[in-house]
Every structure is written in structure tokens, then in C-alpha cells.
Image (cartoon, rainbow, N blue to C red; front, top):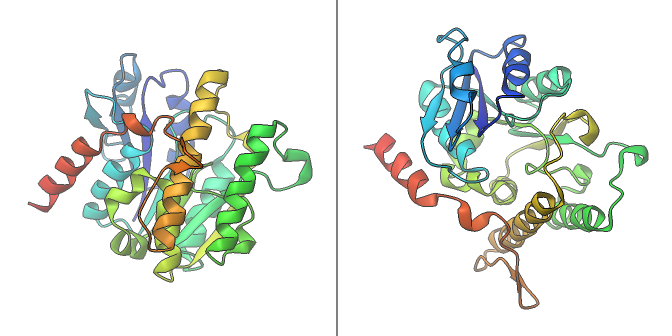
Length: 265
């Protein structure tokens, strides 16, 4: 079974394109995780066949990446063998890339298949801040012995994981994507590039400089945590006296942990 988890928060302008793309693929079940939405996203999702599109709804915002963990728990309990993660605003022409990610898992080539969002020089980021972030991603991949990943990251673009991944990596950690990469490497799971998908093709809307700045701080902090986890040291989001929080403080780990406990019980 192939499942897709789609975090959704006020994505009425894009969610139809994302769901339509997924339904054209051999995806058995799509799990939109609606959280903190105040627009028509939830109503739009009721238009799809309930046997294939099964929304999960939270009135509160769960925070960045937390919906992935929620959806992954449901997909695992449903018996999913392959799980795709696709953001609800990725309205670009990404169907071929999603298929490549799923096929890498289905064929046993990877337990974690990532998108390479900067596959060639012409697609390289231009801003100094983005280049610095890519350097951190590249350094981390080198540190964990996966140099061939380049700058690929579970924080950027869609990716896919296997059943074995879901059984080896604590679901709670899916809320901090780079940490899952650290744990996958420590567990000896197979990690590969499953798709060449330039950032400009994702179709994600520009949400302004303030949002971009907070996202960068979130991801830097996530990678600082991941370095600690990989090295078996204490987790920290600080470097040289600077705390890299971004949106991390808004992640509702309390709701996530309650949700996971209730599924176990």
C-alpha cells in the first residue's frame, strides 16, 4: 500500500492541484492533515472519494512538520509499505518526481528517498542566506557519511519512506525532519536521491521575506539538533550563543504526543 501525507493549513488555492496530482499516481490513500485552517480547505477535500482521500482534522495549528508525524502514524497503522510526504502548497508539475520517490521505496532501493531540489548549477540558490543553508545541509550529509546526497534534505521538497523506516525511526521525530535523516543513518537504513526536482518547479507560493527568514532559522536549528543526535550528544538549537528557533516554538509536540499515545492505547 502506498499512502501520501499532505499537511494542510489554509491551502484552498493549491490543495486541489496537489490532491489531483496524487490521485493520478498509484497512491492508494491520501491523508490530508488539516490543522488550524480557517479557509475552505476542509470543504474542498470532502469532494474527493472517501476511500482514497481521508482527511484528518485538527482545529489547532500543529506547527511546521508536526502533521507529517500525525499522518505517518495513521499510515503505519493502515499497513502502508510506502509513505510519501507532500506539502499542501506544492502545486507544481511534480507528478513524475513523486512517482520516482515512490518507486525507489517500492523497488527496495531506499528506505528514505529524497528530492534533489538543486540538481544543477542553473538551479542553485542565489541569496547568501540560502547558500549558507545549503552548505549546512551538505556538511551534515558529509558528516553522516552520505556525501552523495549533496544538499538534499527531508526539509526541502517531497520525500518518501519505507515501512522499515517507520518501524525504526520514532514517529515523534518526524516533526524535525533532519533528525530523521540522522536516525536513518545511525540505523543503517538506505537513503537515496529519488527525484531531481528543482525548487522552482515545486509551485510553492512566495510567502514573503519574514516567513523565509523564520523558515531558515527553523531549519538551521533542526540541523543543529540533528548533528547532536547523530553524534549521540545533547540536542541543542544554539550555536555561538545564538538560538535558532524560527517556527520551532510553535510545534505542538504536546498534541502530537497525546495523539501517538492514544493510538498505542
